[in-house]
Image (spheres, rainbow, N blue to C red):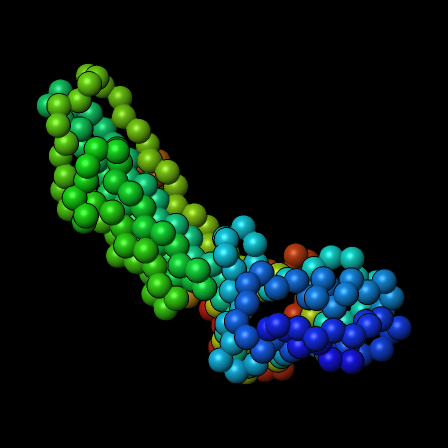
Length: 257
């Protein structure tokens, strides 16, 4: 039995036999168990990602591909990847702000991480009109974004002290999430998303660059008690206590744990 995805042709799944899913065009947040028809009996499922196809994610909170939940005992999943499976990129951190008696000081935003949906660049530390270079650049599907770098000092503050700590960058999304022991034949690439760059804690220092494939975002030039640290990368494969058998492993970026 074969199921074509992109879009799909389906037939009955189940009965303990073998079933094949073919991803023929780029898609997001692919759930193997759901696409196999949520089989209630032990099933042997093979998923093939065609060459030139990207399986991505629209959000860092969801993996690009997951085996899904609900498998009957004795089920097996094999993923044959001839394309790219790539997690979403983390957003850059927002720069902090602080006050002196003379002016607001705005930290610079971190760059967005690389991903199937790239991470957004972080903003500067306070919503006065900033210069463009205060913002971190968004990432791309291939690289992390450059952080904001300019020194921007705002007008007189309305208070004498205090400030805003900024928002932390996003941890990036996982490429594959497994919920049972899985075989992966990787003839293409499997990349965790890049973490967002840290937002700067201080106005005269730049934020951190967004991470590339499966790479943590850079810390901001100036950090304070963990604020300004870069966001973590997404995994190539999130194991959740299960195991992956590679045949071959091919090109991956990001942790496999």
